[in-house]
Image (tube, rainbow, N blue to C red; front, top):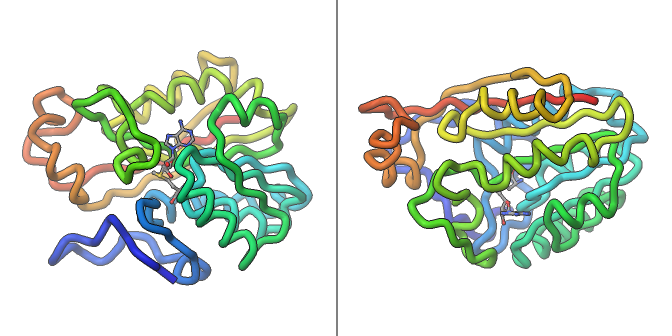
Length: 241
Ligand SMILES: C[S@@+](CC[C@H](N)C(=O)[O-])C[C@H]1O[C@@H](n2cnc3c(N)ncnc32)[C@H](O)[C@@H]1O
């Protein structure tokens, strides 16, 4: 149930590249909460790919938004799923979705620092904000806070990669999704620098959405997108301890 999406598909946009997960059409999405879309779906597909590894696991969904990733993990019989987000409206949506779909899931307002207090986790999933932004300041109650991530798009990604060894228990695995504009190889290297095994698990290419199209010239000037780009690559990075 999409109550309101701040991210309408552009007119004439091609059909979504990834199939919509079955529960995505039945999620509460409050005003100013990120409506699940291609990056969310790529992460959901990766979580499903973990199969039985999720059963009985403690899972963290950092930057949960509606909690679509957390619901997916809970439905794969995770023992406990903590869904954290700094946007109070996202926490309300995720809590509503937990009540509807996933009793093992708990939604709270929080960030990386709060996640560390609740760790370690067997599985960490994250679809963070990752779009480079001309402004560095973020109002966490705004819709923009779902995508704006500092000048290089890495204001959440870099601390997350550095902290993963503390968040993950022995043998734990992290799945992080983001666009090429924030540097897919940079994330792989940052996880390896932190002492983890890391690789790209999956990739897909999607049409540029409204925010990326609006920033395209600025991104091209900064060398973060090829000139005349009308698509971007999304990737899921898998990092393990
Ligand atoms: C790209 S959206 C992803 C939402 C959801 N995980 C999905 O896949 O549909 C990013 C989310 O991160 C939240 N967020 C932004 N900065 C954060 C931070 N430092 N800590 C926790 N959540 C944050 C935003 O409020 C937003 O809900």
